[in-house]
Amino acid sequence: MFYKPERISIYFARIFDEMVKIGIGSLPIVAIISLFIGAVTTVQTAYQLTSGLIAKSVIGTIVSDSSMLELAPTITCLVLAGKVGSHIASEIGTMRVSEQIDALDVMGINGAGYLAMPKIIAGIIMIPLLNIIAITLSIYGGYMAGEWSGIVSHDQFISGARSTFKGYTLFFSMIKSFTFAFIITSVSSFHGFYTKGGALEVGEASTKAVVYSAVLILFFDYLLAELLLK
Image (cartoon, rainbow, N blue to C red; front, side):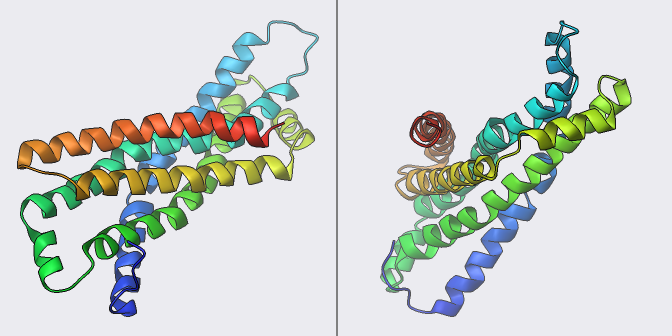
């Protein structure tokens, strides 16, 4: 896959095409999920704060920190594993069973580099950007839920979100999103590239790509937390 490409310009064009598919194409679902995750976190946190001794600003703290540490990067990437991962595996798998990849090899084109590398690069660029959007919308969704329902006021939520903010928390979130982006695109490309059979096997490869990506995301979620949050 890392073999020197024949024509750099073609690879740049493919990378931009994949960035549009992965990033812009996933933006609506990421936005909807993030808004509701933040809103639900606010409501559930308020439900658990049964003691009057705890300040309502804690809700803003919990929503902000949990959005950056776990909710935005992990849940967003699990959803993207289903959307982006299945699309990548089925696209490359279809090309494999229809012998289009064999045709690329006959023409002297590195099939793995031409098909997989642009997707991986595009994923590594766009998924962290989607993570930033997800964090922002998740916090905003929590803020709006608290404001509309009267659970927490504007000043209390903002004060709590700002009081415990650490730059390292956001840095850790970005490290997770880069790692998860590579997992989603590389695992899906692998299963698609080595598909054998026909249409039924393409579906199986797509399912395996989603399942394996989700399991690896959860595993590396724990591993990164164990390594970087001590």
